Picture (cartoon, rainbow, N blue to C red):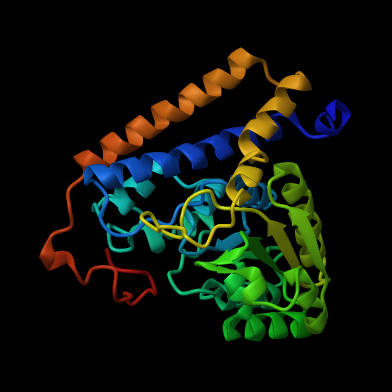
Length: 332
């Protein structure tokens, strides 16, 4: 295990851990602030799915892009999103990523290659395929990665995007975070196959299944997939088997859980598991790990203070950002 870890740059290993901790703590703090009244509306947290989000995003290169989902905070942090602007957006403040218009479900940052989270199941998949088509037509060695859940694989948008991507060998990675439930419906009651990645064969490209609780396994699978995409070999379907520790949304009674299921998955929590590996391999000391964790807490305190101090959008600004200007940009 020590030899395996030391095959990776130390800086990468440290950042994988730091971002997973940041995702987890951001989600927990957002849940806390929603209860305290700072954040309106729904929150769909990704607590438990940090390894899939962070491992996939850190496997990308700077010019690559992602599309996200209603459970997208981890993807945004994984891609380098700023927790201050994210918390402000969740709090519907004018300093948020989308000036308080998008909220939890619709954050975007084109400068970071985040083409947007999407409240529509499978809504981001054809957008990623479209970005990949643009890269292909321009001859750019860039890749689009689309995050989606197991339920999205049953949507027509997935089929249409996967079919064209396979036909045209587009540089896109279809990344399925299979947390076993489409809202409250278990996968066994919505799909006739255990591994959703086998569906990729029907579109003429490979599918692979990876342990979504192992951040390095996810990182390796996405690096391989982006390598294929960047060299003209077309798409890959990566299915990360993972699990969310909270409900579909905050307040979900979760009556659909099987007895003992949660405990079994929590025993494989990706963050303490990777923390222990780093410690045992001598990559980081206990003191260094605690320093990273303390730094994350300080960052979140700053993010909450930033959101609380920010103004709310004025009613007369409601249409700002809705229409494009003559140069094709959004008007803010």
